[in-house]
Image (cartoon, rainbow, N blue to C red):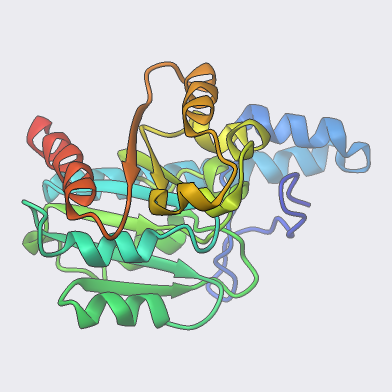
Length: 254
């Protein structure tokens, strides 16, 4: 069983593409906390699965690189504003982008993006609480990478599992919204430790919540001192432009 979410760990097949890409030390940590799994055969199977996913993630990165595309993994709780940010950024971003969209069910988010003229591919994971490298591989081949500068991988809404799985992205952006309440960063440090950029979203709601945003920023920098942080109010185009400019800078750096 997955130490984070309890979902089954099985080998990749055409019928079941839910692969877990824990790093090797995380696999051993899982076995330490689940003694019933701690046998040679189980370790060999898990290691084989991790190797396959890591290999596929490396292939995804190489594929993005060969097309000059920057891949960005977007992670957050459900409802933090990932899709809305992508919608709003479309008209002001100084780069072209597409989106590989992950949700358990429906194609609603991809449909929203397509309505804005954004190339989007929907992945329905079923019961899987995160995307993995094999799912993203399928998505990237469904997109015209020659026409975009950035490919966003909008992960399943979840503050736990997506941070543990390499999907082949170059950068990670993590969103945390004001209505979620304080201490999400302290409670879910793995997610924020992986972040290259943290976005505090829905900041227009700060007057209505007891939320010390400065303290939360300090908490984030305790976990990752060099992380970049921006505040986003989806009604304020200037705040969205700052996010777009950060991404454009990363594109130009390549």
